[in-house]
Image 1 (cartoon, rainbow over the protein chains, first blue to last red):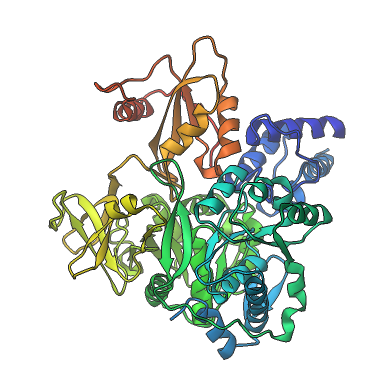
Image 2: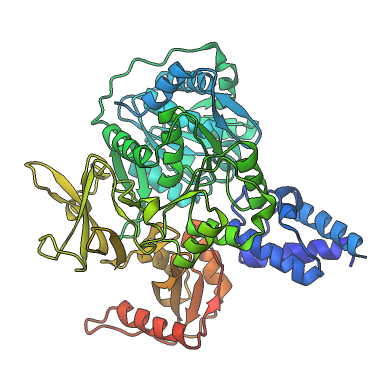
Length: 86
Length: 534
């Protein structure tokens, strides 16, 4: 899948599930945690979604802000994981 | 004793010891003390005076720690609010307590400016990481501006301002949900806080070689007291912003030699889902749990995962900080109990007439001790309904509103609430506050919010909604409206649309009937829409 498509899908997921559809202000580099977009349960929901949607397995030590804490980090992370699988 | 003495005494005894470890930095007691003195001087210079309220809206950080102690050193009263508090509520609290100062992050200041324009009592803004735009906005509002960046140069040991407070003066207001739908400030004196911190550090056997990791917000009294208690005993606090990313937190526990880990049931649920075999916790001495009771199954599993660690099951109320704790040697014997009163505190159960009841009888829990609050800020009626005459002339005891029974040995078991306040994730939530948020949508005819039993949250929030005829409203509309007006933990977990809601004979929405029907539905098939899991 193309990076742009992944980006737009992930943004949709975050905006729909955590911002209830109101995500105009959310920039791609914004910290989801610091800005109150997601909390600890939100992180778990995000991980389940990534695993199911992109058919990847995420280890406990990969659940870190550098991989998951912004739309930008998420896109990079999913990209890397998919390449590793392929 | 005054609360700021916790810091001052430890800075005198252990000046070069690490007091605070944050995400990326470490601070000695001397550094924290110097910065707190410098900020206190700046507050006094800006006009903050004895008894003034100073609101602190910062994530867990060195600045938040410094601001709390600086406020006390300036003879003022600190009010810590959650960093994600919404603009309406921030303005409400600032005006409700007539705060004269606020300590706030520039990112927050930028997005939420209603607190600048609609708060006539607020005179001084102490800003972290100020940007030019914020400077401009604050200056336009006519308020005094001070940048916390100035504190970087404070290591040259400023003296604290002269102190005038005594220990029966207020030290903090801790805002909690009120049944009227507006948050109310719990008034805690220095004596209240010192008493509670002394009782808790006594039963946890805290010492200066303890290292406690705190992933709970300082706006939550459980998170705040970790700081106060570590500074009281001269220990070290590892202050992080959340447990959302467990892996780095667990690594820190090993690396920093953490001895105490305060948790809530959602953290326990996450720990139990992880493979913990790769981590070692060689120095971990205790886990504490409060907020909501741990499910018994969790207690058993945690005991198996951490066999050498003492687990303290506890129960608290903001109005007296902590009520009870279960000694760790009792956790396998009576895992469903929240224990007995703390050292230097008496707890007992009364019937509706106020008479003490015996074992197994359900009644309201009453708390007696120097940790009991002075009342709710400027709410005499609400104060009188829970602070009532105690055994000694002039004494007040706290009627908790929580129903309990005690076993033959005096150990306490939680039964439920006496009013319709929902306890979710350990926070008291007023259904009215959520209903008000929902009613602010035009398309709503009726809304009722109830709590339904949840093994992790205590209660989960459910909203039942009747839309106006012909109106179109979705679950997302409801959740978005709530998320825009309320803190995260108040956003309903379940939303259900109904054509009508049952009424009492007087025409009010019959919440009891709704709750009973929902409980029945939960045991069978449920048509709930699962909203956001908190």
